[in-house]
Image 1 (cartoon, rainbow, N blue to C red):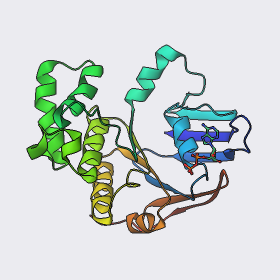
Image 2 (image 1 turned 90 degrees about the vertical axis):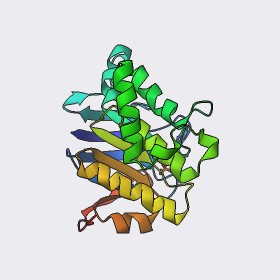
Image 3 (image 1 turned 60 degrees about the vertical axis):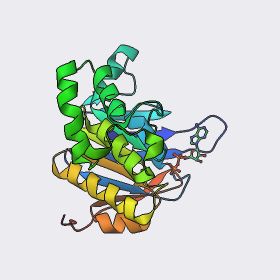
Image 4 (image 1 turned 45 degrees about the vertical axis):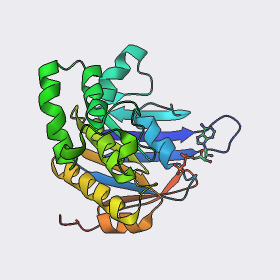
Amino acid sequence: MIKFENISKVYPGSSPALENINFNVNPGEFVSVVGHSGAGKSTLLKLIYTEEKPTTGTVLFDETNIVDLRPKELPILRRNIGTVFQDYKLLPKKTLAENVSFALEVAGKSDGEIRETVPKILDIVGLADKMENYPREVSGGEQQRVALARALVNKPKVLIADEPTGNLDPVSTWEIIQLLLKINEFGTTVLLATHDNGIVDRIARRVVVMENGRIVSDKQKGKYQL
Ligand code: ADP
């Protein structure tokens, strides 16, 4: 589904952020990308959601080379990819429900569909009773659950989570990880970047270890039972 072929990335004036990366993700996988800060995890993920372009090499998404997509082709790709980040990126002046419905509006969904879908997805992430609250009125873990709901509401094939638990306490962290595992059980491919080895051990799926822009290990671990 996602294929990196001979990828290198050099930001101007820096040593390479990625060097000769070859890496495949199959549909339905849960891949944790782990490594210290600066190892290249975010850059790797940015190439998938086309926030950055590689200096050399090819990135295929469903057999399409996404490196040279024209601007008008990007929305089609991005519809297949949901993203969540360390800093939830919610809109502060919108309620939790409005944050989610906004993603549906942008995707051109009808009012009826939006009214039906928003409570359902917020219920899945356990926030049905806080729909009308504003982001500042709920905890970091709850904000991240809204960000997850927003990322998933348009049913992307892939969810990319870049340090989603970086600002969270251990309990909220594990709640988010369990949600990611549940989302994956329902068929969404998940790519998670984290510097936290403890999380990755508990997830116990495929683990890609990065160091200095290279993949130094890529192993399948035992399946975690929900
Ligand atoms: P990680 O996500 O593992 O912390 P990054 O992909 O963010 O790693 O960074 C990899 C390397 O690329 C680091 O040396 C970082 O300083 C550098 N880097 C990342 N983004 C930029 C940028 N926009 N401009 C210049 N250098 C960058």
